[in-house]
Length: 133
Image 1 (cartoon, one colour):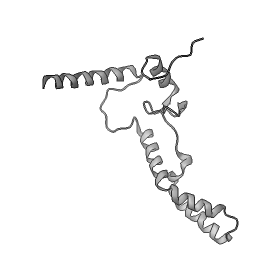
Image 2 (cartoon, one colour):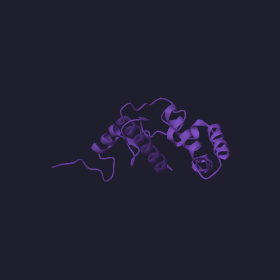
Image 3 (cartoon, one colour):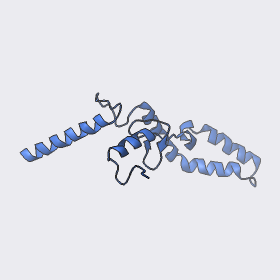
Image 4 (tube, helix red, strand yellow):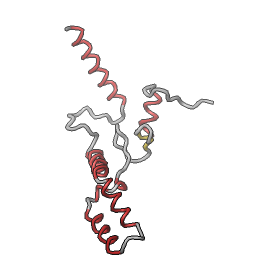
């Protein structure tokens, strides 16, 4: 039992050390899983875009089909306009998962360029190495 509590203590202290390495790492109370409200908004948009993807694809196919009558295309136009705005995939924006920074995000790692370099410099990313020549 003592070993278990000791292991938990080590894990807890390691988490604090990791947060200390992150620039701007806030040690305040955590209210939800996401970094800030912008990240939460983007996650909601992603979910809504996924939920409406089939319907949106079907309506767009009808709208862009020139063989169908104009009345049917106009009805599809109205239906697509009635869908929620956040269901459009254009409104999704990639953000850094650690800082929620919207610009300079490396898509493969979902990290901003700043956090990517910081973690790579401190050997916290496996397989990433500074260029040397």
